[in-house]
Image (cartoon, rainbow, N blue to C red; front, side, top):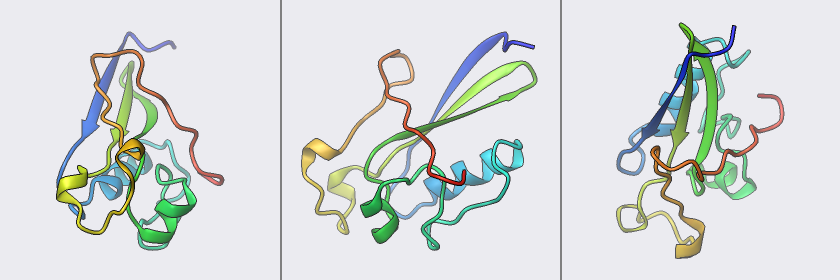
Length: 114
């Protein structure tokens, strides 16, 4: 059955608030992931970049989708803003700010094994 509509949900919060862990848990509970990954273990689905896994932080926004009750749900896991992330030395160009109302946000491929 095709989804009747799409719901885009952006996960936004301060650094180390658990945005990626929440995204991972929602995907796992919805059955979109076979196993629950961990930011600390470096195997979360949406943090697929080498630097993200090494440092345990989200650098680029990532989108992961699942269907529930006839609704396609796109979870947008976002990094903390550069000004609120003292652990980040990423250049400004590495940061993205997706907008759920804009169809041009970029869906990232899930990490291998997700």
